[in-house]
Image (cartoon, rainbow over all chains, first blue to last red; front, side, top):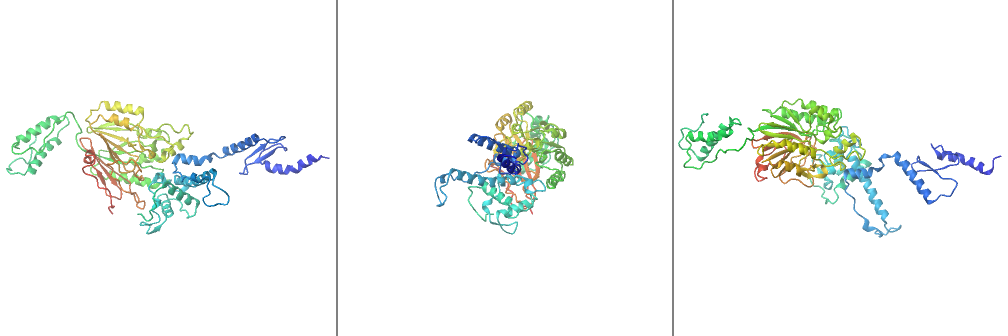
Length: 216
Length: 381
């Protein structure tokens, strides 16, 4: 008859097998899995974990993930290639509670996250702007061929009566016209994430320009 | 000595008539002269005019034949130019191919034909063999001889491998009708790709992005500046000199590589000449500049126009106006360079779908005071 411990181990076995995935670990090893539901690393057994153990485990998981994801630094890469105009600096709000929020004052981390998330959308726009493939161009033309750094796009003049189209349009309509004709790509629905990102990038590059809707 | 017409029986002639007759006498004789006889001729023409009865008393001579110390250009001539076609394989992008065919058509329809055609660089878009081969094949249809200049889009996939097979050396010089021509590879970039571990195509795509900040600025480079110095040693300072270069050989806007990093050093080498003309590609727009003795002229692209840079635009430049995206080929084109015996040029921008724009030599030599070109406004149709 097996003793109580082994019986419990056998009970745990299906659970351990479930979480082990492809790792062929010994039945007594415990694995921790990353939020991508794939990457795992073994937890040291037989002693209480120290902070160093935990940090090492975390590093190991991140290294394994990084090795599987070579494009992970795309934001930094895009910034280096295409010189983003930075978003507004909100750091003077740190320590304040400008809108009387219930959850507390603005912190450094808040300011960093807002800035990073804003940049992420704009950088995605930059990526699409500079890539004929992402625009779906059949002739390998990208927006930056006529608009390096989004020059000459004049987003601050929209909405305006676009003479050549015979109607009043928004920036996104002009973007779609360009995608359809010079780029010969797939026209995007107005709420498509790609369209939103492209608009974000074009507006970002014109930071500081006064709005002047209707200008020819 | 040729009998000079007009100077005969009229006793009462206006000042203008006398002036035109003097002028015809001298220029008519000069036209027939060989370079060797030039010096003799200026004296002889004066003598002939005197001999034909033009009086020196009574009115101040309106112009004089001048004696020059050394030979210059023999006669004016025309060069055509086509530039920056950025070809993909024809199955990939037909539009750029059709644009280049249109330019070749424009040049072939010139009557009389130009002395030669200069190609301003960026024949291919990504430097691939099929792109360069396609470009070479299309340019073969030109009736006039072609002189090739390399651009960064031709170079950075295989660092000139296929270019040299097709077109020969990337830098060379030649003489034509008394004018010394130099063709440079002015898109030399310091190695930015090895440290980043880029593949050849990744390197090419980085360089292909005008606004891609990972690449290095264009230079002529130490070795090539040495070559240039040696080549120009034997050339007399009053010889007309024209330099073909892809990058502008001055510093306009660094972020788009409208820039040559060693521009000052190159300009110093050129400083010994009375006047120099630089004709450059890369900028895809009407661009005019003058720095000291050097007159700079940009070339149009057949493929697409660049916008004007937010800063650094030379004062002399009369802008071509914002291209209308709804008008195909607006802001693109080809053109003609009229080279005069003194080495200065009239630069004709043949903008497709617009009236042509001419930047004359009197405009650049007067630093913009005379003969300002008319900005292309309304289209001609």
